[in-house]
Image (cartoon, helix red, strand yellow):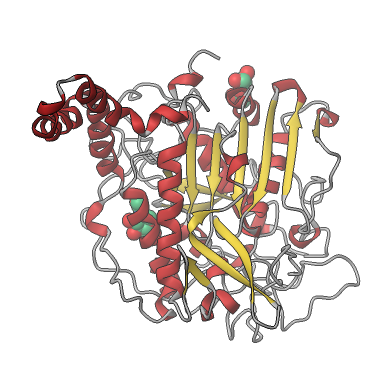
Length: 503
Ligand SMILES: *[C@@H]1O[C@H](CO)[C@@H](O)[C@H](O)[C@H]1NC(C)=O
Ligand SMILES: *[C@@H]1O[C@H](CO)[C@@H](O)[C@H](O)[C@H]1NC(C)=O
């Protein structure tokens, strides 16, 4: 805390101090000069860093792709979102706000922009040159072993394909991990096929380090890994617990510190891995910005969303060493999509506001908060991109379905779709000073129409109505395991915070 005080005032402090001591009559003349020189002088070092960072960022955030979306947000059709938070099973209770069903409109086919220039090789987010040589010990050789053609070894790990791997997948046997909650426990709920658990994501031009849960835990030793977001992130969180659990000879060496069982009703979980002195945590935050309520004249309470204020769970975020954020699915339906007397900025409650624009501003609020409060020398921050939903023949709430899919899809419009919301994420991240690592999983999830719970989101005789399937979340084991493997790969391949070096 002491540290944070100087942060803002610091740059001003030097010149101001100088101004104070200087002869008063010189002050009016000198101040502008002092200010100017301080901003170029005092920030010499930080300027260097930020310059380096932004150059760096260019290498992995292809700016040409990022066309700023028109401020006039378009109708939400194109944003094709992904979906939803637990559609069917959804009684997500949110304290203040009434549970809004999640799902979004899947009109997904957002034709991918013609852009994509010679595809700049994006490495895992930004891998600095420093690691050219440091191949994670075990690099699987699949296909042409590494080499993104540029000789730099850089490679877009999100450009690739799903390959069948009967030997090494799944990373944990279906039905064996106690941390998968009912909504994602497809095998236990009676899903008969298991092919969907046997795919591994394989980049086209390089290989991912072979997944090693023991090594992952070693890297997390003494640290806090926290996933913050909606139920899609809880889905990913459960996957994380399960893949790490496999490394423990004694499974009782991990436990929820308060003794809680995972359920959608609770918004915070902390799992401790005793032998590694590390925790894996989940913090529910549907929007990343602050939810609230207002009272109208009849004293009825109504939910509002303050898009210029960060969510109040942020006090927890600050304590993490590795953060994984997401938001998106809650922006596409119900009150959020309608935007009537819902969005608030400063003291203004907008009678009507476009949800895409609100999403853009909320992400900027999040980005500013990260820039201001997180230190790249201590923490790693990921933003996990949109996870695709696959409703056919309707929407999540109008009979859309995905049951009976047993194979990924390899062609079709959905394969090329890249939602507007992701462009907004890229735009926000690109402007940041903090080097956020974007888990660009949208397109890899596009293939996986076979990975959703569909009608297997409930146990036993509790039947999920065929008309309310879950084609948004993912069965576990399944697709989120691959996202977590990408997090592992990023920790292996990219230089980590300097504060981690001497562990
Ligand atoms: C996994 O990582 C651990 C710890 O770094 C190491 O001892 C082990 O050999 C690795 N396993 C494989 C199969 O590479
Ligand atoms: C993420 O992947 C999409 C393709 O699915 C691509 O168009 C986009 O440029 C990628 N974003 C970044 C930051 O690399």
